[in-house]
Amino acid sequence: MSDVDDKLVGRRLGWRRVATRWPFTTPWIRLRQDDVELPDGRQITYTYLDQPPAVFVVPVTSEGQVVLIRQYRYPVDAWCLEVPAGGSHDQPGVDLTELARQELREEIGATCVELEQVASFYTSNAHSNQESYVFLALDVELGQEPVREVTEQIEIVPLPAAEALEMARRGWVSDGPSALALLLCEEYLRRRGYLGPDEG
Image 1 (tube, rainbow, N blue to C red):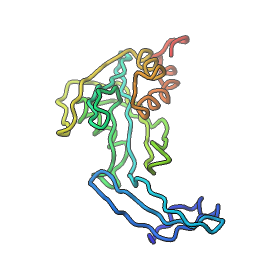
Image 2: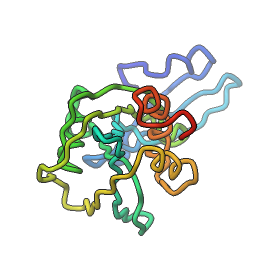
Image 3: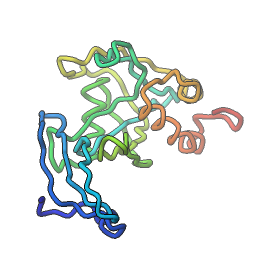
C-alpha cells in the first residue's frame, strides 16, 4: 500500500484501501488499481487514471476577443474547438500560473498582462483523479511563434466573448472541460465590460 493515505473521506465512510498498484504507465498518465474493502466487508478493485493537475486558459484580448483553438483530436478523429490547455505531467510541482502562461505561449504564441485563477473542477471524476484549474488571461497579445508538440495541429480562432460563450452553451465547443472553462469565466468577463448587460 502507498505510504500516503490519499482517500481520507473514503476512510471516514468506511472504505479501506488494502493495496495499490500501477499496472500501466506512460509519460502522460498512470493507470491505478486500488483493492478496496467496503463497509459491508465486500472487496472490489477500483481502476482509474492517476493524473496530475491540468490548466485550462481562457485568453481574452484587450478588444474583448476570446482566443479559441481548433485542434485535431486523434481519439475522436475530429477537429474540436477548445481553449488552450495542458497538464503538469512533465513538470512535477510546477506553479500552475506559470503552466498557464506556458500553454498560452506554446499553443497560440501569446502573452498576457494579467492572469487570474477562476475555479477548479474534476475533469472526469468517475475515471480520473485529475483536477483542472481555470485561468482567465487578460490583455492577451498574439504574435509570437507557437512551440507546439508534434501531434498538435492547431488553428487559432478569435471570437467576440459573447459569441464564444454562446458556442459553449450550444455544444459547439465539444470539448467539455473547455466549454465549462468558458462558462465559468462569464461573470468575470461581464464585470470587466466584455459582455453587455444582456449578452452572454
